[in-house]
Image 1 (cartoon, rainbow, N blue to C red):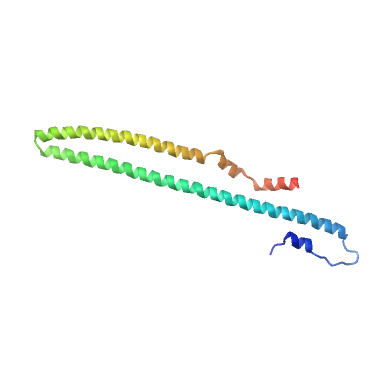
Image 2 (cartoon, rainbow, N blue to C red):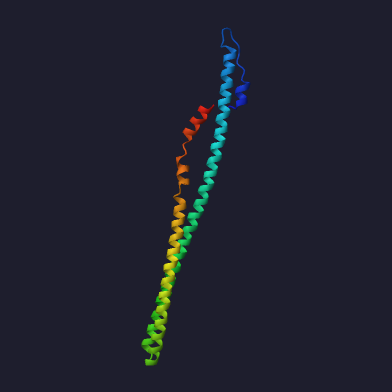
Amino acid sequence: MPLTPLDIHNKEFTRKFKGYDEDEVNEFLDQVIKDYEMTIREKKDLEEKVKQLNEKLGHFTNIEETLNKSILIAQETAEELTGNASKESKLIIKEAEKNADRIINEALTKSRRISMDVEELKKQAKVFRTRLKMLVEAQMDMINTGDWEDLFDTDIGEDLELAEKES
């Protein structure tokens, strides 16, 4: 079990003939107690900082997971839209080949409408892609902010040295 400042304060030494100067030993023990209490407080402060940083890291990990899921959903949706548009256009073409001139004229009309729909879907996909890209870039900007560098640049050794110099 580690020593506490109270253990150091209450420590009694046996007295011997020609022993150490009692006042000098007591002064030294008082200084050890002060330094030890300061070290304990610093340790608690650092543990709190570590806890806060771990909470922030968890938050950013959740954001990353959410973004990854969003990207996968967007990719699946884009593939599904492309697949559906492709299937629908093939069906229309087959139907047009089987029927007479009247059906061919109707199929051409439908084909034009579908082409316009496909173009509209492409435009929407481009807009969606642009918005998604902006979202991802905004999130990357947030990840790349200086706040991260401050976290990584924190030097515990320097903080301890400054605290010791201030004492």
